[in-house]
Length: 314
Length: 175
Image 1: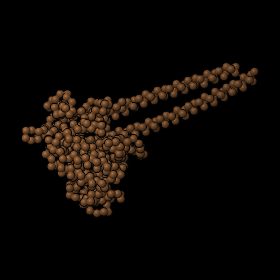
Image 2: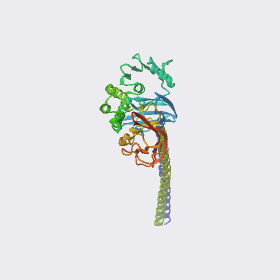
Image 3: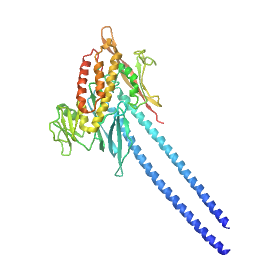
């Protein structure tokens, strides 16, 4: 009996120790790993939230840059952490969408987010990714022939653009803006050179033939605001944003067409309906910047006819 | 004796299981509480950002091409084209998501036309032009004074008639 009791006691002790320890180890490991996993997730979500909030804030801060009768405006944004602004563009819906996605540096490591902030009423021209803490934003209205939108050009303070042999009006405009990273003289070797009279710079502008050559791509423009857009943006962004601008032109042309009808023929006459319709259709069918010239011809006709009206539509 | 020891061990396992379930529930409850606070703060931030958007938008909306007078009434800043707005209110299905706000309307301040909604029958003697109403939970409106201009026919000539109005923009309240 006592032998059996001893045996049982030995087994019981073995069972108690092994189960208790085993349970404590398993539960402890699960809890510790769970806590580490959750805190990592929470930190990451927190960083993503900050990036998304900053992205939205940047978009909102672009609202005051809407111009009225000014020819251009400039401002700067400083973000506390080193930031990468990813500029995207999508052709969805009636007007397409401007996408902003921010990646921020934390403990010397880039925290990449995959949440895009979307705006339908913004047109940002920059390279697909710009990096820095301080960013300059310069805005200029795009009229074709009436105002379509304000174009925003975002550049990092790390990149300095040097305009060489620019036409007088461009040089004056850049000087008047006094934006620190846009120069017309005293350029240094590291600056991005924008040349108007030669073809061996980083960016070459053919002002007479109305195209900008950059990274072996040609981007066609009409008017100075689109020229700046082609200078500061990469070709993919430029072509996509141009299509979005044409979508807005299409809608605004229709708006003026209907305004003319609404005002009635006896008040101001009616001479623009057909041309505005053509402008709207051409704008809606633009495939690339090379076709911009055709739309520009119709836009000129529409502009001349509007100027000749008893009361102008815009 | 063997049965008594087995029962004691089973009781210990049961105690452990109950403890484990209780600890898990405690963690879940703490997690849910923490998440609800985070979600509440996130919604609050989203609403604040929407309000900020509406506030900054209202000051510049009058200059956007869909609203502005352009050069048709001379060079006026903060001038809104009444005829264009009358057409725009009919085209709101295209513009519903464009400005990212819940409501946009223009209310005449002087002369006071009361609460008469503008449509083709009441134009131009009406007080409210409802341009956008997305039928969502809208926050309080932020406003800006504008000139509301249109062309009028006089006895011998066409002249510009501008009235004082307020442009009101309401943001969407999230959650």
